[in-house]
Image 1 (cartoon, one colour):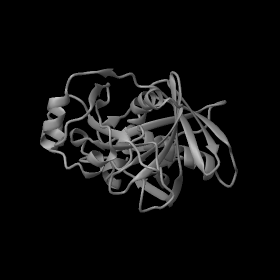
Image 2 (cartoon, one colour):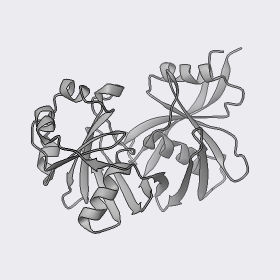
Image 3 (cartoon, one colour):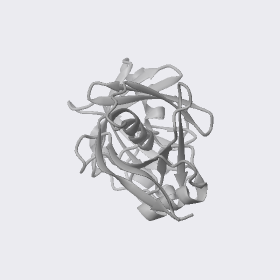
Image 4 (cartoon, helix red, strand yellow):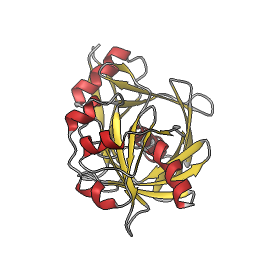
Length: 268
């Protein structure tokens, strides 16, 4: 008999299902093999699924899978899991949850008005002299460039180059990181703007990228002289993230909306 699990799709970093970044979450997957959870990605045609396990004490185990195996986790999928744990928990209203990931990290999440906010470790970044290479790949020379484990960051002084950017994805794919992040000060609607290009992991442009904010929020907090940052992702779908620099931790929050609630039948 095929295995089965509860299936949810949640749009993250937006309240409108046509915007934000959708993610799939599975729960009730007791006894389902890792191979079946990997197969779920292929069945759902998604890059990653979040798997909520039964609470253990004060923490809730949270795992992530791609079609190739276990995954360290993605920001939007973590927010989707938090939405299921806090807003779709059999009618019980919860205000907070602490996730325990497979790589032994803790992710505290809590309801913050209409949003859900999650704590992530800051991702350290350092200056690197790649302005010329980035100009070739992105079409416009950045003010400065940074590097972090997740990707390279190109910083601009005005939002227009970010808004109008038409990057050369082949050149971006030649870099030795998963992503190239472009960011600039925002206009009236946000403090900063951002776009993320990740052809190396199958995302020509990421709809909304939580992970990138673990890098750029400390940068903008220092540059703007404020701890709280409202970031707007300028992808086609678009999204909004409300963030806070708390030293070693970055709080990333956003609205979310349940789109699909059902059951998935998985191969053994």
